[in-house]
Every structure is written in C-alpha cells, then in structure tokens.
Length: 85
Image (cartoon, rainbow, N blue to C red):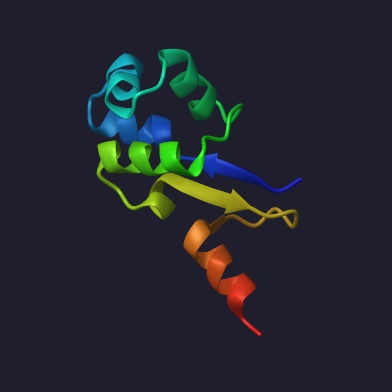
C-alpha cells in the first residue's frame, strides 16, 4: 500500500526542538506530532506545509511518497513521474 513517510523526528532533533515545541509552533497537539513521527498519521496538506516551514525545509525533504513497488520517491519525484506522457 502506498504511503507518505516523513523525516520529522530527524529534522526536529537536528533543530533541538521537543515534540511539544514543534506541536506548539505548528498548531497541533504533541500526540499528533508523535503519531506523524511514527508514520501512524498522515497530516493534511496544510499541516504538512506548516511542519516543513517550522523545520525550515522544503516539503519534499520532510515528506516522501513510498509507492507500492517499495522504492522511495520524494513528492517532487512522484509528481514528475506521474506528469510524464
């Protein structure tokens, strides 16, 4: 099953942010951050953009699409693949 994976935990740790600090800046609960980090929750597009903005990275660095074939692709790579004729 295709899914969205993320690098939130790693990016958050690099910036010395706690889960609560990230949650407060994004406008979600700490439980939501935990669920996103554990790939148990895929955020809305708006929340994904807010997470990336707080972590100061492009959206595709924070979130990746994992297709059924198991190969990891960034959202940008998947968009390019789908748009090819």
